Amino acid sequence: MNEWASRLESSVEFYRKLPDKTCQECGKQMDEQCESYENTCPSCAEKLQLSE
Ligand SMILES: [Zn+2]
Image (cartoon, rainbow, N blue to C red; front, side, top):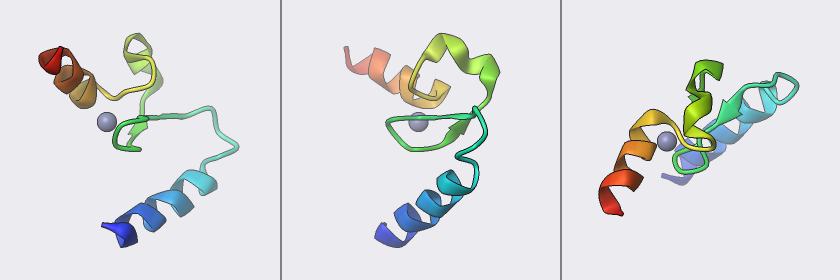
């Protein structure tokens, strides 16, 4: 789990200069077309909606 997180972190750092957004729930990189989901990817947004 931690290993994956640090891999993801370097990946995020690599793309830091790009305006790509990442999901605040899972850290997954999101396409700009996902603007309607703000800070979460479609899959996490769906989970959040279901849990509400
Ligand atoms: Zn997510």
